Image (cartoon, rainbow, N blue to C red; front, side, top):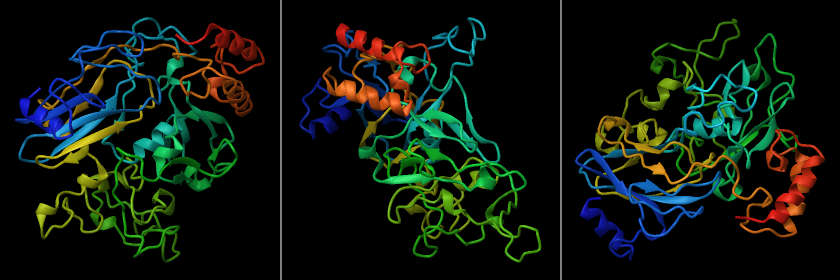
Length: 415
């Protein structure tokens, strides 16, 4: 790690050779990436820490990474979860395809990624307009990736599960609630709206969840929330896409950004910009001026991608940030971090010290790090809600036999 990075840590009162609250320190310098983690002590499972590795983590475990830009220009930080190591659970479940398959490598962004990625984690893989929710079994292939999943219902009332950002990290609720004709089609709309487990409309992501894009497709002061952004963007779309018929002749004549993709927070947090032909260009093209710049008259104000996170979370020259990670999956192959613009050189992806295949302590249902009577109450609530954590015997079903399994797990204690 460059010695200049030690000076940045020293400014926070962290002594040389120490890492304070950080699980890893990542540095941009000379258009390359460097980094290391603590090499003294042990991880949660008792494995010795190594400087070129990062301590493993469990699903939903929170940790921080210090990211430092020592170059004299902007870099972009992105963290991508590649999922479990190849062949983990490859023969398990209902999607077995032999012992040598790359299908299990399902990578998804967790930090420095457009806002749509948060909705994809919640959906369990993603939402496809006119095809409802689409899920892949490899997204949460291990039991250790299913422990914290929460149920929801698709457009036909089927119960599915996905990862939801905890309430204290969301900064308010953003309900992704597309209309029935978007879930289905104009001629065959869905039977229901997407619903959370309590029956309320829309699946929940955060308004201001850290690490996800902050771009707004229009100013709520110009076009109030709850309605379209009524500035026609078709001239800025390379495909000339149009989605609204304003004159009633049956032909779409404008491209307006729809209300269900707009963040309900008027002051902060990004809109969902889907990777579809109509909207994907606007991950790069500023809808306010049709250029790549925030202000074409003053390029020093940066690029539109600095807000969408289409390349990652920007760090201007000399900037250092604390990236607070809330991983939707347990540690797997690598902690993959890179700069999308300098991808050939700017990659530093340490291997985790462990890759769990099962929860650390399944009886700790409320995940407070201890076993106590509150876990029984939490198990009953999870059982009644059909949440995966209630499956204590790991058979993929939630049945009364899981109660006996929970008692056995409780009596066995935590490692």
